[in-house]
Length: 258
Image (cartoon, rainbow, N blue to C red; front, side, top):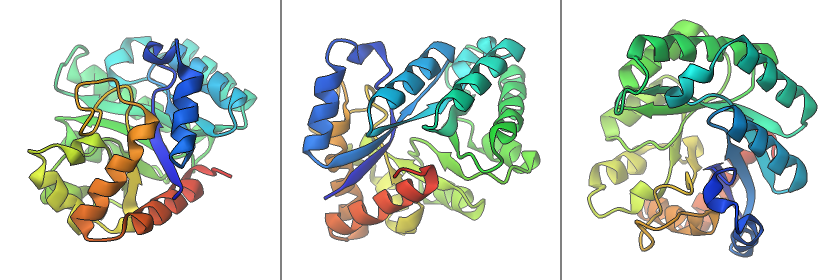
């Protein structure tokens, strides 16, 4: 069974001591392709470097809304150079809006989000966008629609209900499903997953965060992705092999994972 982890942070300091072993464990359980996501300039550089060194890894570069203070001309120039130097930058992100903590004012977050969507289009008009959306779905969808982007969009770490999922699907976007789908109180999310077309679902860990059951509360890692696949399969009443095959094919096509 082959799986693709479409949102991991192996560039996070949590993996500095044992990153190679973590990657080896992932491959041992069938996680054959991984998208390592940047969240600021330093982590984007690290993601690109890891992708260049490790064949299973691909990179996304971008500035997370909580790091929006980094965004500007110098950041754009640095991210452009990263993208041009690497043949394995497969997406732009994670970018978006986070209204939960509001460490950056909402108007500034929206401005940076709009600017990064436009910037990503200058790298490639079809470069997929990895979207961070926390307590901000209405505004995220509005900014994306107003941008007129033709790029594929992945709503990372979707945890909403069927109505929220329908709004995203109606906009033509993909949904990233992670460890939250395994949590006891995630019935609304599982109902949403049950109603989603399988070919619009991507599997992710978001490691080192949001470890699935039975590892909840511990450091997450890509080798736990089969638990997410099993949760999706149970919600949709499908064989886990079917979920793995379809979601992996979607990831490989969307991100050019050879």
